[in-house]
Length: 134
Image (cartoon, rainbow, N blue to C red; front, side):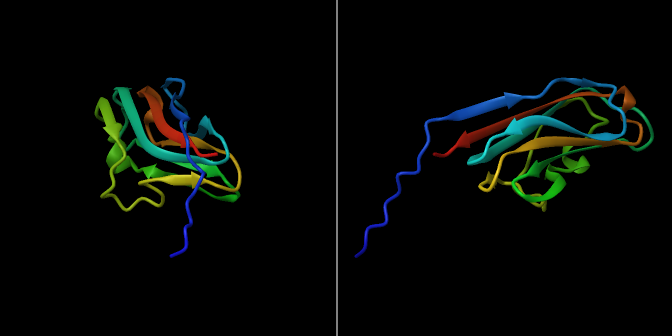
């Protein structure tokens, strides 16, 4: 039997909070910097003021790591439900590109949020739990 134990462990857990975005324009926002060697564990969005308009969208994704950005890599509009106030959590059962995790192995990056279509009355904040593995 060959031993292949690892020394790559962490005691560096971080819970990050974005700025609160009020009345965002239709755009993609870089919200939270993620360092290289970070593993995303969980993602939440708090809609503190419901979004108005006929069809607002709000998705949470990521950019960086030497890969193509994923605007809804963690949460789609179905999950964030921007027309309803409250705290929402990324869900393992969804078919999102990245969740339930994302490892930034090649380079750092950022957590992003994309808003469109009538989002100008909403207010939201994104939270991310991650570990940096050395």
